Length: 357
Ligand code: HEM
Ligand SMILES: *[C@@H]1O[C@H](CO)[C@@H](O)[C@H](O)[C@H]1NC(C)=O
Ligand SMILES: *[C@@H]1O[C@H](CO)[C@@H](O)[C@H](O)[C@H]1NC(C)=O
Ligand SMILES: *[C@@H]1O[C@H](CO)[C@@H](O)[C@H](O)[C@H]1NC(C)=O
Image 1 (tube, helix red, strand yellow):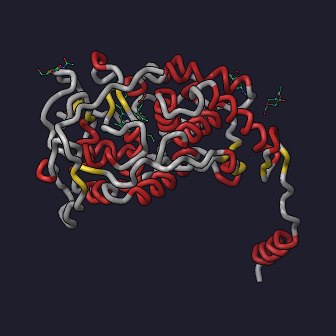
Image 2 (cartoon, rainbow, N blue to C red; image 1 turned 90 degrees about the vertical axis):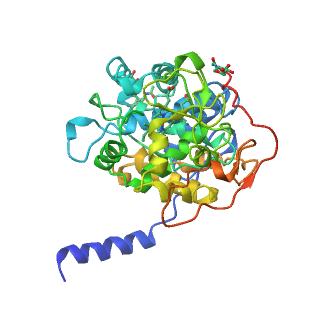
């Protein structure tokens, strides 16, 4: 037996006899499995009350969720200079990174988050992922994301062009995401985030136009509506990265439209249309990976217990919106028929802009 394997057996034996970790007592009678998690309860109280306006799934939540991606994806398996991953560099070096074209509009949430992270003395990298996880838990039907704490506060700016753009081809997006470690299926799962998304910068004239008709809930409706035949542009002007959308007021990203229809991604996309649970669990898995890009999970402490349990969605079933029929669906998975979905009755709906909070 090698020294290495003897060592492994001895450490296993030690692990088995070690006392269970003592519960730490935190503020307001809450407990945590590790004392370092306690301060995150205080951050939780603070951001739910302040940043998220009393625990809403509003604009700051959408922006915070987007920021988890734009910070973390500054990472490359092949180029260490591309960025440090989920390292808070988008806040540290906001004067550089928020000027990158793909990061347009992230400066608002960066400036809202910065003083809160400093006040609580937590690293920017930790704070961004925590705020995204707490925020999306406020959305009905939302995921309960893992949260690991302990990212260093020291880092360097991410290079430009790590964040995919809606004008990019599917090949380019899958290539960039693959270089950061994601499969094409994981890319599709991550796009469940667009169920609670609106845009301000593709067509600035129609501020707050959502990507689906139920943007206040984390549901599969976006996967259905992006497959509807596009008929018009919500702002009546054509902008780079925008595709025809099916409903008045609704914004469709060209990248979402293409990923929904591409042979490499269409079947995974379609699989979520009638499976909210699978959409949520695959999103949770892909986000767990994204949130620690550039880190080793073993160096971090699991404080997931601090993340609230989301409420259920109003409906676990996506539907064909009123005014449309199954014939309007551009089914794009060659190996499976499009699932039978309910068709909501009534005249064609239009999608109202997200009110600023
Ligand atoms: C993979 C390719 C992706 C592309 C091309 C893309 C592109 C975009 C664009 C252009 C917007 C609109 C921004 C604006 O005009 O204000 C947007 C919004 C958003 N994106 Fe993505 N995105 C991608 C992936 C992701 C991922 C992985 C996440 C998170 C996990 C994410 C989360 C969001 C959220 C939450 C919003 C809404 C922001 C708000 O309402 O303020 N996106 N995305
Ligand atoms: C803030 O955190 C740093 C690094 O984790 C630590 O060294 C420092 O003592 C903390 N400061 C306060 C005021 O708690
Ligand atoms: C992280 O770095 C910023 C900018 O240098 C600083 O203001 C903040 O206090 C640091 N936070 C911690 C936890 O060290
Ligand atoms: C776009 O055109 C349609 C049809 O003419 C009109 O009803 C709608 O108000 C226009 N939208 C905007 C944002 O101008």
